[in-house]
Amino acid sequence: MAAAPRYKRILLKLSGEALQGSQGYGVDAEVLRTISEEVKEVVGLGVEVALVIGGGNIFRGLSAAASGMDRASADYMGMLATVMNSLALQDALEQRGVYTRVMSAIEMKEVAEPYIRRRATRHLEKGRVVIFAAGTGNPYFTTDTAAALRAMEVHADVLMKATKVDGVYDKDPHKHKDAVRYARLTYLDVLARGLNVMDSTAISLCKENSLPILVFNMLGRDNIRRVVCGEELGTLVCAE
Image: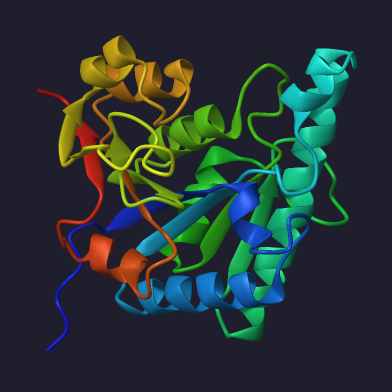
């Protein structure tokens, strides 16, 4: 008998880089297939799922700004990249019979619904997967911050950040063999130690509203379902 889910409503944050797979750019069809199948499995457990996807596989606003582009213009371009990723994931999910809505913080009625909090909540209640695109709709804010904001607006039980490593480490595990993974951290631990979980604005938002953050490896098979069902994977960031 399958384990019952621990969470009723989750917000899953995916990086844009995760979608590029081994290609180095763009969207890898195999990665899309894997993610959409795992999300479908979680929806089948009765869990309400919202998603936020970054745009770094297509365009990185910070990198462009560092090269001399106006930061606001670069960030708006990054937001448009997240819409492209959201539409790709929507298509992959709907090919597998999962009802999905893309809601954009920047109005573009032909391709996505405008973000309205109550409508988003209603979609979730009806079992639809909601993909929040275009960040917060404002420059100078990351998709991490957008994920924290949307998770609180729709009253998600947890913010799940899917990464390429299996949690939060005291240093880069790809560069240091002696890196130690934390099983549990407080928000203040993350801020004080400068750990690379999410940006400080997102961490502060979660801290002020007691929203737990679960960082786990998305590359493992069934990891999304396993985390949702309460298996001790990754790193949990929460209050004392």
